[in-house]
Amino acid sequence: MMLIAYPLYILRLLFTIAANILRKGLHPPEYVTFTLHGSYTDLRRPPEGFLQSRLSPREKNLQDLTRDLKTAAINSQVKGIILFLNKPGLTLSQVQSLIRVIEKIRAGDKEVITWSTNYDTLSYCLAAAGSRVLLQEGGVVYTLGFASRQLYMKEALAWCGVEFDVIRVSPFKSALDRLIRSDMSDEVREMTEWLISSYYRQFIEAIARGRNLDEIEAGKLVEKTPLFGDKAVEAGAIDKVVNAEDLPVYLGSRDNPARLASWNECNKCFTRPLPPPPGKYIAILRVQGNIVDGKSSRPPGRPPLPAPFIFNEQTGDLSFVRQARAALRNRRVRAVLLYIDSGGGSAASSESITSILGKLAAKKPLVALMGSVAASGGYYVATAASHIVAEQATITGSIGVIAAKVVNTRLLEKLLLNRETIERGKKDLFASQDEPFTEEERSKALGFINHIYELFLKRVADSRSMEHKVVEEVGGGKVWTGQQALEHGLVDELGGLETALARLRREAGLPENTPLIDIPYPRRDTAPLPVSSGWIEFALNNLNQFQDGKALLVGAPYFQRP
Image 1 (cartoon, helix red, strand yellow):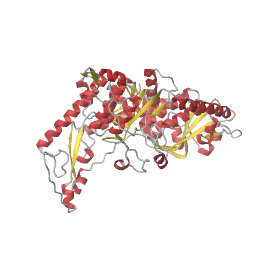
Image 2: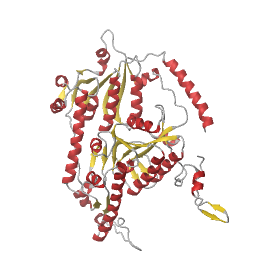
Image 3: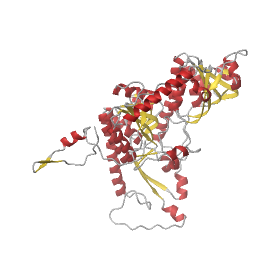
């Protein structure tokens, strides 16, 4: 493979050099514009098959957006970047990642101007990081703040003839509360209040930093919203009311208007970095969506409306374990980035994933990067990493276990359906949908849940070097923001992709241009690897039986050249 890789690399290198020479003769605009609209993923989509890649719409992602912003900003002829914020569907953690990029660009003496027709809470949080915040004529800075609205469905489900019987470690493990309660519990109210308070504090800090205010002044500014036109300028929320078509004159003059061009129009004006040589790289393994038993699945695209049960991405332990074993075998993989954007799922699958990650971490540096959510099973798998990076607003924690079954006998009666069952042996505790748990079944199920919970606590305590009782205090199903998780010792550092990669490069001694590459799903099944790295060492370590003067090798290792 390397005999082919090097000639291809030389061709790519020569092509990039030639293209960069030609680009130097092109003149970029004074301001490069980017339009942020709709939802974004944190990372670019992993490689897919021929058919799926053509059926799947191209998803916008922050990884490519960040690269493009930096490429435009480092050009000496570009005065600044203009971000048109057209209802961007960003989470608060994604906004914080972009704010970090904007601050680095501004530190390089380049302007970052933000413009929008209207600002809501998250778009204004992002806009405030800019050098100048602009608003369209007739636009408004809406009322700024955070709210959590939760819909409870117990009575509605009971009217339909459906109920859920839930067993959990504590009332804070509230994933199914909306299905089993009519209102918010005291525990969930307390937890929601500390989450919203943390979000609001992070928001105020971002506004204060971006608008050069202290936090008291930033709080007063937020309290004045909604703000319109000149009132928004007077309050210091924005810098100018100006329509998009008037920006060239506003940024230049009537006689000499500034030259603006979108990234799509002018991206060929900018030189590209030289491709890294073939060889060692950082592998990325992803835990996204629900953690399930079996194979991973990824929908062809995001639906226009939330449909989590139909279009949700799933990470299967079978697929993930095969990927991780491939990364462990591959000598070119010098470090591994574990990206997590998951609210959890199957406890057994989470343990399978964590187990193989532990083997991987023993051989190669492994850093976990949390997306918008890394909770429950999503946090469980992160415990295998030597270092955990999260954004301030990342939802994480939820160290706990919950189990439930649906009881739908009354629904079947309403539909005039009759279900009959013939059994042999002891029935599955969770299989029967005819009646809730009996006291004996509940006791057995609770024993199973407590066993899994103790394993979860041990994983966290061992990984974080924390005492068991300290983990219990922050566990019990409690959910935290990334900022709170850092304070509680559940994460190591606040940051995004660049922060995690910088940590990996330091640990592995890798240069800056080391590429980040997805491990493809292996088509073939693979057996667990021996402890040693080479098959010869494996054979020598297993020569533990002798017969007729001949060594008998125990086991059937996967013979891979070391």
